[in-house]
Image (cartoon, helix red, strand yellow):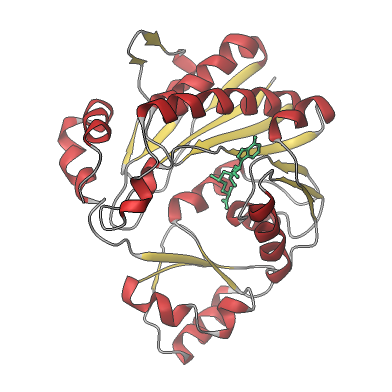
Length: 311
Ligand code: SAM
């Protein structure tokens, strides 16, 4: 099956001409599998020992200690070793690992993950916080909430407090409570499209991306309310659509721009693109230029990230 035509058309308007053909090809091939050590339960040296004992060839990711890449053909074997089901490793795309890296929570801080399940980023945040401080994880979908809880337990997270609730209500319930907030927003998941898995694309439409944009705007406003002055908020999605990335940020800056700065993001690889300056009739605030659009490769998923600071 090929990509939805309207989607590829839009992608051609978003991604620079010099990169678009390479980007389109990434949807056709299975991605390299990446994972990271759970520092709450193990260490890079210990995990490497377990991989070697299981004869799973791995490659270290140079820019993130404890992160690894293996061939997709070895994924099944990875999920059969003790380290996997005892929670000493977590399979996660590298783009998703970048988000907690950029938010960079510290031990003892008060942190909120506003759209948390299945918990990949919550787990990494807990590791970076060394299981100290207070980590709130919010997820309204019942089924996904219990998956999140199970993942936190398997991976030995003890500083997380989970809430099955709508993230839109959190800002009013917990005003100015958090030092750092992760908003990995529900999105149209365009970066997860795979032409060999038609189901991954079957629910997509431009209308859907525009509808999701409304939810993202409200979640961003809620996150803003919940953030302490001086606190940091990381907004990210796995969508390419400006309606889900630049536009919700524009909406936030139009409402609270006098109290917000965006911070430049230095990423450890170069398959990135600056945000758009305009889309359709919308001209975006120049501060959004500090955000980053990750372009997909055979290893990294597409992603969009923006780090904000409340004055
Ligand atoms: N951060 C997660 C991770 O790294 O494993 C992935 C989060 S996923 C992109 C977005 C999540 O937002 C989904 O689990 C979805 O159920 C949840 N969600 C949907 N509507 C929401 C809302 N109103 N408030 C908070 N979360 C919501």
